[in-house]
Image 1 (cartoon, rainbow, N blue to C red):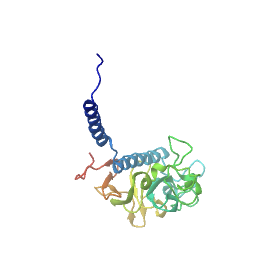
Image 2 (tube, rainbow, N blue to C red):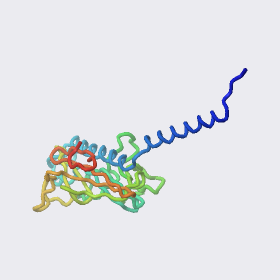
Image 3 (cartoon, helix red, strand yellow):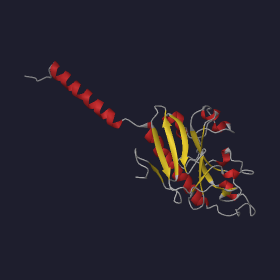
Image 4 (tube, one colour):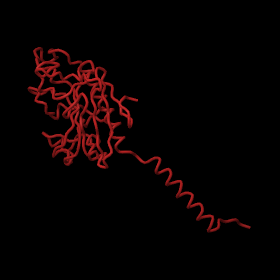
Length: 235
């Protein structure tokens, strides 16, 4: 006599599968805000790495023995929104080496994606059609457009930082503001640009839902971490 499943047994199995699928789906569901924070933390560390490797600390350079504005060329990560980013929050990693170091990234100044030599590390920047995320010739990284990729609505630099940039010197120490406006390696007039507040530099990302995440970059060491809810120290 052949055995077979009854209709009740089949329904029961399908119900169990549905329950398990629901549970697994909830536990594996991604958190775009957290993903954006993890990616950004990694790219801040990479910006610091580029600064350490570049070791820019005096006016001498291989192709220029009299480069008196060497400190304006430090590696930096800049946030922004523009037409080329489709008016979404993006960031670009570059070293301002062209001309008189105006503070604006040229295509050739932007860091190369270490995982793909055909891409530069920008989520959409003005000045070149190759940096226009809405154009088929786009050679940037879509993931750096955190507005499109992770639905990040806004950013804010707080604590020891302000504006839209974070940069690093040859020792990996973080700086605030535009390097291009500095008068000396550490000052803009009477304003010290080296981050020296105890709390370091804070970067606040806000998701379209209103949820926020905070990244903290420590002074001196430039160590970056994602703060847990209700804490003010790196975990």
